[in-house]
Length: 321
Image 1 (cartoon, rainbow, N blue to C red):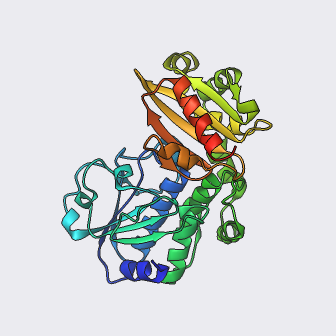
Image 2: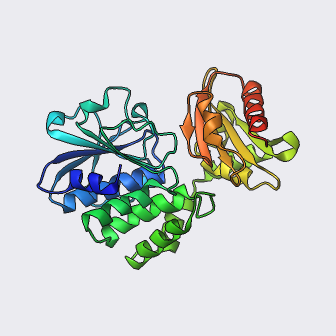
């Protein structure tokens, strides 16, 4: 759908909206949700931000919220009077286990996952966009809303995180043009970098050390894997594994990096990253009901780690890697 149709659905007169994103939000999810809510409020709409894992956001993302901004959870009492805007969620079950119309209807779906089945009533989907933040900028432009610092900060967080600090294959010229606009609007890239990528809890650093020390090489180094058990989590005092998979991705010769984390008895959460565009890791994740981007995806499995590693390796071979 053309962005002008989405802009028309969001334009005044004043109405009620719920803005949401996918569970376990990352920087693009949270940043796009916050920016979209601010965009709509600036147009005079009544807006709530809702998230299935709320209230609030994870500690590493909540700093983007301004005084008075809240992310709520639970039933939306006036959902029948609200339109739902979902950002960065490839499927409805990534928003909620329940019928998403319990949050608002009709549903406007803005997303850059290439495997999004267009689950909204109105859909703006571009699998070639670097991030959903980049697409929210398009919506703001179509509405004639200038990008000020109030909007630019969460959008820049979304952009810098979902491009892997401007390193993923999806980082095209448009991503850099958008970044320049956001910096011109007052974003301090160094400050964002420190807030997002530094200040790591010591426990997470210990966890990264244990995980990297135990990493293994498969497929002649093209696949680098680390298995993290609950004992590792307890011993290190850490919980964030995103830094681990990014560290593994940087290994020389690595085409795919994977972290297999124990989340319950017999249940493992798998995060994958690709170096370059030789492998689409979202296609690998889809084999186990997961999803994501070509360069970053995840899934949950009840297979033992050795079977998960074999599954990833076999899927890489099927893609010629």
